[in-house]
Amino acid sequence: MRRPKGAVTWTSKPHVQRNLRALARSEVPLTHEGLSQLTPWHSVAYLRDLFVPAGILPPADRQLLLFQRWLTERLPAIDDAGHRQSLELFAAWHVQRRLRTLAGRGPLTGKQVQQARDEIRLATAFFDHLADRGRSLANCTQADIDAWYAGGYTARRLTHAFLRWAMRSKHMPKVVVPHRSTSNPAPLAQHQRLALLRQLVNRDDVPLQDRVAAILVLLYAQPLTRITRLGIDDVRHEDAEVLIRLGDPPSPVPAPFAGMLLDYLGQRPNTMTATNPDCRWLFPGRRAGQPMTPEALELRLRHLAFPTQRGRTAAIRHLVLQAPAPVIARMLGYHDDTTARLAQETGGTWRHYAPGDHSL
Image (cartoon, helix red, strand yellow):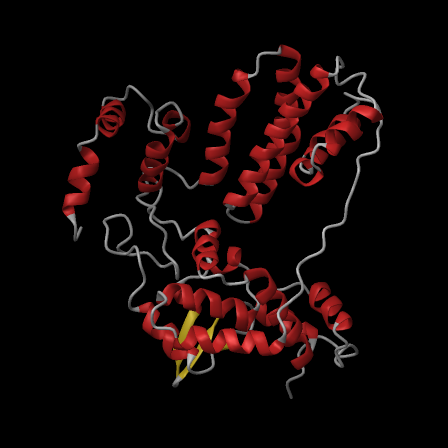
């Protein structure tokens, strides 16, 4: 590694020495389950990230493992045995089941796991709310539900999952769970989107990785969850043309963004340590073999006051006006139904375009 001092500093820490010694002496099995016995969790997560790319451990979704670790510490801390049992069932049959399904489709994101944690926390708080009113889950009334949500609907909205599960599982009587529609913020106007693109191209005081990520949002309507999963192999430079593979076929990259993207490939961050020398992610993270998380990228763009959601909405709405919705869907990795709906909402003239191969 180019900076061996970092490794020396890391291995000099007592908890790192303790964990490495336990693994070397087989006091703890070198498995995912064995690592879960070690502490602290952030150091264990780092060890796991080292072992998986090296082939010492089989691949596993790190976010799912972190959630399971959190759950084993959270549930035993609940004093009421009845509440704890209900939450264990909810966690097993709803929360973890959903996370495993999502993990089967692709790596879990920090936001997905944070939502799972919040669902457990709010379900715990709801039990406390019932106890304060002298009630249990089995004799919960509509008045108890209304009083709970009156304390702050937005902050308690994620209680929906627990209540609906409890009613389906017959742990509580049928009640009406309040619902309030949440509308997305209005998209940027086209002149605002173009002005932002010009700023991102010309602002040399902003880190190149942040500018590249923001332009991928504004040009190609890509969500941060997808941007962070792009690899350097998704950027192709052929016959003086730069392409980026977001769907099929790859999308052309216009100048001057094409030059920015090629420059960025030669100066990606987090590639100087022993954990990531051969990293193929377009936005490498600090952990071995891991890309930057969507949450970390979102925070960087937020510091720039970049309107990520409004910019992405503006981009996709503009794109479906320029080309048939099925073409946009295939090139950018969207579902046909999504782009067709947006085309209809924006008054697109390609609504009767038939999807498929139109080449001669």
